[in-house]
Image 1 (spheres, rainbow, N blue to C red):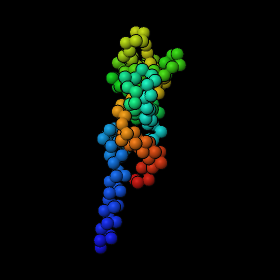
Image 2: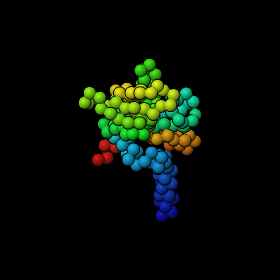
Image 3: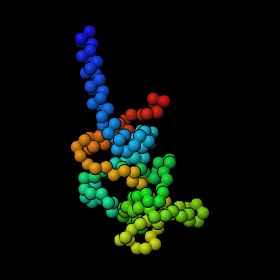
Image 4: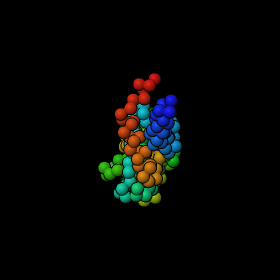
Length: 161
């Protein structure tokens, strides 16, 4: 009986420790985004800011969780921050001020940029994705992000349906 109890305790401790990174990611990015990342793993990418991040307001060592424009439910609202390819072919990042429709079906967006020319327009086909969350870097979050990235590509949540 004592042997079985020890095995159960060890198994319980293992399961708790193994689930902590997932609980951390759920707390950081939210349950809806966490579950959606398993259904659409190709639509989420976590970028680490190494100090050369294209116009974001993040500091070196932070992570940016990006939802790609290829996501089936991709929508941009006012005040969302998007990463896009500008007219010079460079990657840029801006917050969206307003959305308009151009020629009845093509969406275009006006960015909030203090250092860019006034009247710059971003068309929907230029947008790479939108910033879902900025995550501070520390050892635990870095480990949690890596385990989450590995699991969304290797686990199929649809198999549990």
